[in-house]
Length: 208
Image (cartoon, rainbow, N blue to C red; front, side, top):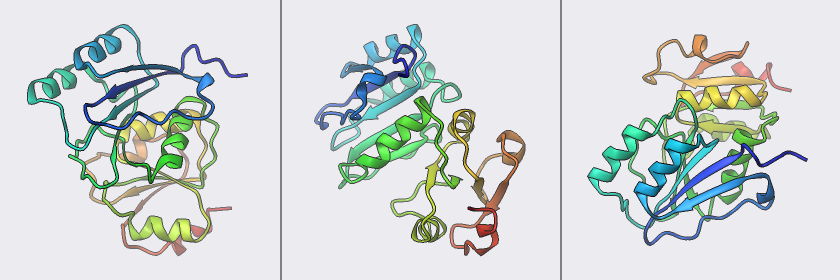
């Protein structure tokens, strides 16, 4: 059985937030959870997590000073950052964030994301690197409607981390993202630039 020794997951439990929904196979992880932002930063200085989660409440309850302190101590090149909120609240977007998850609607997706970064060995059809929007892009909806599994991510570093432990058939990168040479950065033999509204016919022949 996979050891939980190095599968550290850090959770900042925001005020007025719902309790973070632990994965069913939580014996595979070491969870560090706190509602104290300074204690949370101390965790990051002592241990490098595999995944970092901000489980926020009905409002973004971090003060500007706390946010600045966090930015100085967080390294999105080393671990993906997930923000979770209740389904009726909008997110404040940040380029360091890899995933924005609305709970409880996206519970299954959240657990798949955590497994992908920690346990790995996932074989999604498509790794999709695109901007976050409240609704999935037309391109992503066409993929899922055709029965293809999609791992959607919004941060280039997180996409790179995902590819170290998982094996998608292709990688699709949205045009006009502020990433330079994504094809060179991402270690995969099939990387395609796509439009949010385009048809999937051009890439279908690469999918099994």
